[in-house]
Amino acid sequence: MPKRPPTGFNARRAQQRRIDWDQPTPVAAPTPQSRPVGEVARHIRSQLKSDPQLTDVWIEGEVRSFNRSGAGHYYFDLADSQNTGKTDAALACAFFRRENRGIAVQQGDQVLVHGSADLYLARGSLQIIVDDLRPIGEGVLQAEFERLFRNLDAEGLFNPERKRPLPTYPSRIGVVTSPSGAVWHDIQQVVTRRWPLTALTLSPCLTQGTGAAQSISLAIERLNLLTVEEPEVIIVARGGGSPEDLWAYNEEPVARAIFASDIPIISAVGHETDVSIADHVADRRAPTPSAAAEIAVPDRAEEAARIAGLRQAADQVIDRRLTRIAQDTSLNRDRLERAVPHPPTVRIDVNRRREDLDQAINRQLALLQAHQRAASSRLKALNPRGTLERGYAIVSDTDGTVVTSAKWLRADQQIAIQFADGDIDARTLAVRHAREE
Image 1: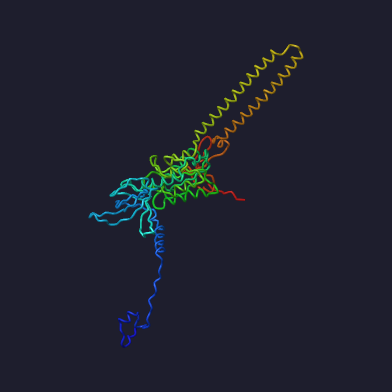
Image 2: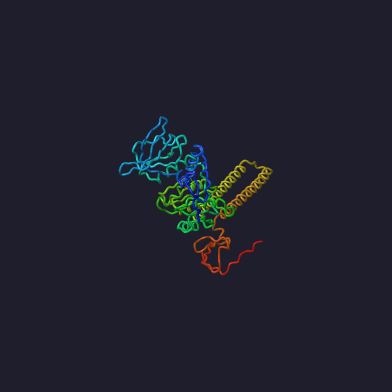
């Protein structure tokens, strides 16, 4: 229960002296701690610089109080207007000469600007440092695309000299896409049909929406960090969609992840008419994900035809050389016979030389024939069907994926086995794994 105030207590005076009825002892007011103006202003500026919503912002409004300095800098206010004609809000803007490039701006223009908030310390005034300005109607996405395109192009991310060739016969391909979309299924089918000796590694990611750009970037980095079964080429793929759906492939993190990749990258985003910043940075662009798979691997039928053509050309070259050698030998023999005198000793010497020449020719022919057989063997070894004819077979699951390890199978699983002369469907009875030594 609070104490009663003492007799003669002056409440007004006690309040002035900060005396409480329960504690009549005066309490001194704390002395406020002061800071220099510059310290406070720099703190406010650092807060502006650390806010991502204020360091990369698009703002729409009307140009007011426009002024062009003698140095070519633009200074103006960007304002919202109400129906009454009164200004609802305004922001001071600075558009420096190195950024404005002589863009035509005048009082009353409705514009879209991109920039970052800053505090001008000398005056303590808030201003937007503008780095891009567009008339209203061009669209934020298109403006952002062109702004980022110019910046990355200036850094050399689109330089044709840095683009790397793709491997001719990749043993493994990394795929950056959604595991649940049709793109992953289409790429599997194309690779299995064209070149079943190539294995695929999926690095799953989001392909649209919030966080998609970071997800795609991390998926590319994961493939580059693999030390076992490292892919020789990467396909970054997504199916068609609206510009908003495909926008993740126009964001800076994806562009820089593709640029930093140690592995060549094929970009296949959307349809043929959809061109993204990822397409410009990648080592190769494909119009569709299926086309990317066709670019990444050769066609086994075309390769078999090419090898057969090489074998035929090699046989023709060898045949022509043998024919020419035989003709030269016959001609030289006739010349010797005409030039040699008739005495018996000379005839004997000529016969001996002719035998030596015949032996040399036979040795040369044998050597050429050995080279021909070796070349034919090498050509035959390059033919994928030759591997199957030596007793090997290709095992794949019901999705057409090539099975390279017994760990991928389970008992009573439907599989397909491809031989040199045909295919069979089979089912596993049991799976036995080899013991690791």
